[in-house]
Image (cartoon, rainbow, N blue to C red; front, side, top):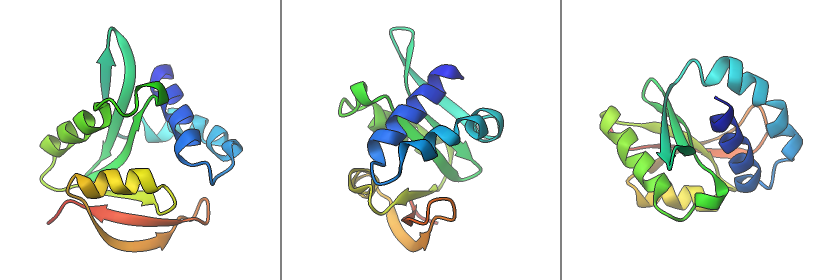
Length: 132
């Protein structure tokens, strides 16, 4: 759990530089006590070290994060490919301002189905889906 939370926090702060780090830090307890335990979580291990993970909640890809020092090495692609084998279709939300992640999901078969404002941060996010 600690390794997953560390990946989540450091990657969230890096990917979401348009949101204050204090917001992400304030969410660690909820991630530990509520969100991760309520999700089906898969961890990518390399040399006995957790370097990435994804979490599914029903058909929602609730999280996909890779430790910053391992980004750009295919870990996210492998995690997403595995997640797609677990469900017929996936839905996710991603901040519109997070251009790299938006492009990643678009390149891997997701389509924007709508745009909305995230209630927690006030930032716009895309809801994306892989299909039916």
